[in-house]
Length: 322
Length: 241
Image (cartoon, rainbow over all chains, first blue to last red; front, side, top):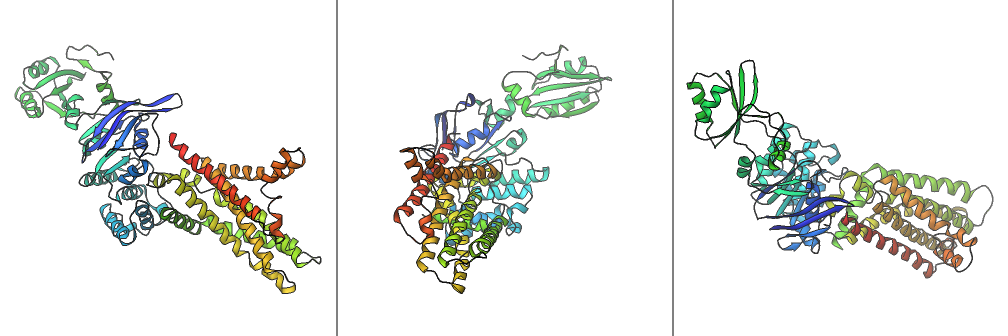
């Protein structure tokens, strides 16, 4: 339902988007992933026809975002990185205005606003001025205005930005709940945000689309079946043992100190119990077995073929960045 | 038209929900009252029609200043606070946005202008003027205000924040007002064109004396139309970046 072909955007001499092409089908939840300055907000602003592309084409349900801008805007809801609130208006007054702006009228608008207030859990602040709300509530009201007119596509730009951990979990739940009625596209520079909600990710880097894998494929590509194992032993013994295990694809030494060895293993899915049993049965003290935190920098290093600094391979030689 | 009405209702409500609207209202009424009392009424004897003329003379100045302050927030404030994304991502055309915001500012200015009516009515206590002169003067204030608010709307569309919008609008209005003096130091045809284009000295004085000229009304309406058209084009062009 969203089709993007060779989308390019220049700000003066600087290229913000470089011939980006992708498709999003109805009902998908897509994460737009990228570091700061990757072009995520530019992409979203073009899709919402807030900005025109320098070249290329984007359509929503066959409607061109440039030539049919008004029709496109009627079919989507947008939450920018700063919620577009009018500080002096009450929450309910603001949502009514947003609903009427998108074509809802009279009693229908009021009913829909009340429904959306329930969905986004903002009913208890409906009479408050927007300027008096906490950041978390402002984001919720921002999502409420984006869905009040039942758009087919909801576009969210960094919806969890600035939220505390509890609010982030609530926001993720809210975004997940949108999937039943809407196609969702949201941007983030935090991989965990995307992984909890999305079917697929679009990875942007310096304006270019590096890939659009499914989340399950991403896990494999980026080594999210990687585990860190620490045993109280010298490296040689555990490495020889683990090499013989089926499902262990790669072993590299992370750290050796104070009689302890930390290894990074790339495994087939769900081999961790076998790894743990093998080490313990052979008498090794298993001090750690868990997944490493995967940050976005590591994602990009992996996707672009670079290796993380400080890693040693199983022979003990330091890996040099490619 | 429905979208324009919606925007007008929201914007007009914003003037009355925020302190700025009441500050502008009370400041204009205070200034007009002080100037009317000190200079229009004054201590020397004057004909009633002269008092009325002076009232409209001072009111036109406060109208121009109020127009700048009223219009500075129209789009610049939205850009500052981030709320512009709501209206710009809605199925509303740039023309509807600009016209809606202009009308809301002009209606608010009209409310302030009408609120000064008690002052000309005070003339009837000791004197007499024609209703025609009062109506002509107020029509002049309203059309002058429309032109000034349209110029302010363009300033607000161009500027990234309200302070720059104020300076830009003040500069543009100031330029259109001093054209009269430029006309005096240049030769035809430039002097003729400058004199005609002047926002104040050429077209407003007849309203003060009760002379209703359609040419002058048309002039102010044309200025408003021109600046609103430019504002719409600028807002459309902003989508390129």
